[in-house]
Length: 103
Image (tube, rainbow, N blue to C red; front, side, top):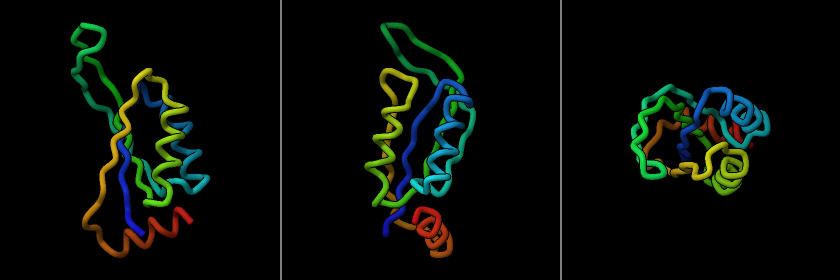
C-alpha cells in the first residue's frame, strides 16, 4: 500500500481541528500536521497577505479519494487547495504504522 500526503490550507486552527480529529478517529488518516503559515495570494483582484494554517494529511492510497471528498465538502473556503503528493520513499516502520493506523 502506498503512502499519500494531501495538503490543504485553512483560515484558522479551529476550522481544521474538528475535521482532523474525526479523520483520525475514523482511520481515514493516520495523522495530520497543522502549522501556522503566512500566505500571499491574489483573490478577487486583490493581493492578500494573511495568516493561514497548513494541514498535511497522511494517509494511504486506498483512502485518498474519500479524504479529498471530505476535505472539499467540509472546507470553509470557496476554492480550497487540495493537493496530493505521492511518496516515493518512506521508512518501513513509519509506513507500517500508517497502514495499521488507517485499517
